[in-house]
Image 1: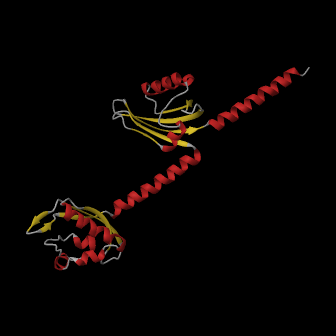
Image 2 (image 1 turned 90 degrees about the vertical axis):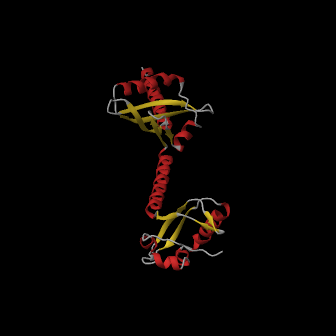
Image 3 (image 1 turned 120 degrees about the horizontal axis):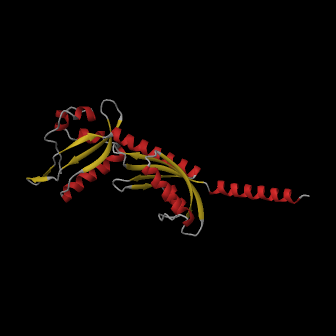
Length: 239
């Protein structure tokens, strides 16, 4: 059926570069600005909202009428009401270009961070001690094998003691090394560098840290120690 816009605010001039009265006279003006790759999806979203009588929420790109820039817009409406057999939406269109750019920048930053973590075998942990919300990076979970966090029994008590003392004494940073027992029965050495955050009453509220896989480093240290011991034994045996 036909489509029309009975009311358009002045804001449409900044968002699309169109005069409100011109869009009211010819609704196709704003459809023609929609990016070619997004036009079919936009129209399909409108048709779906009309057919199912659901709220319209859709994000799409346009070419700004004046600047020619590609801008990201979001349209949000309530559920359409039916008047004389026609659907009537009440809602708004907002420019979300900056938001989309921030999302893109964040995605790139996270991708770079994950690449750096994998290259350096560094895992990140963020523990919210107040709300109980914890974050473990994918690399850290890989270090542990799965989500189970099992310390080597010889290190468990020492690590927990160091952790408790650090918070009790209001330490801002704690660095420690420990072994983990992975579900496949292999052991790995990790080094944790943790920063503690406190509230005004000096209660710990958050800890953020990195975990580095130092298993190869420990293997080299053990090999060097064994070689040194061998040399010492040989030297001591010489008359």
